[in-house]
Length: 270
Image (cartoon, rainbow, N blue to C red; front, side):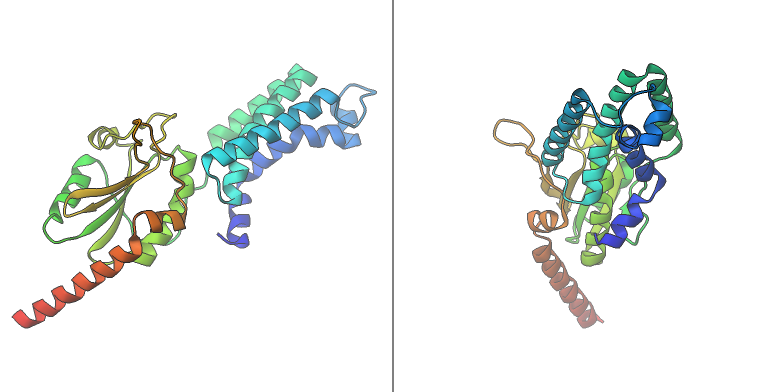
């Protein structure tokens, strides 16, 4: 994702207001005119030792969480950072003035209700399945012709799934063939799919998102996967990781060769 695309995403009201909420307390405390207006008379326009410690703790938490979540883009870092920064700001505002804390909390609540996280709307070659029956039918119908399906299981409310959307769409544009197809299904909307394909769709799930590779109706690979101790191995869904883990370059060449042979045989029959 280039700088222009990143800035376009960050100016969206969802991210823009999150950044403002995250910087609200520090900005109000350090800019003297605002400090004199919002804080008791005589309050110095500087952070106290306790406020500084809270902000340093915030930095440590953000660094730990972004590393653990596998954030690889500026948008991913900022999304994680603003989530924890808003919590710290709420604590600081309530500590300084309960009334300001209540106003701040109401502002967060209104933002949460009215402004949703932006979704990817760019070009893609992806089939969206509506329920378990549609997905099963697509996989079953291509059982005998060697068609490969790469299916992403996601939930609209999960940030990691939102981050995957532009990556998966770009991969679909680069690799789609008549016998190499890409699909997505929202297991938050269709929980029967989660049950059928054994995917945990809870807020604490380590399986969101999940991507499965199918050929001739059989699953060849799924990430994330279980280790020897029956624990899920974290998988970072970057474009390079997905391409390498699912060996898409080899599959693409194989599907292209099969397609060419099929056309050649079909011409012979004619």
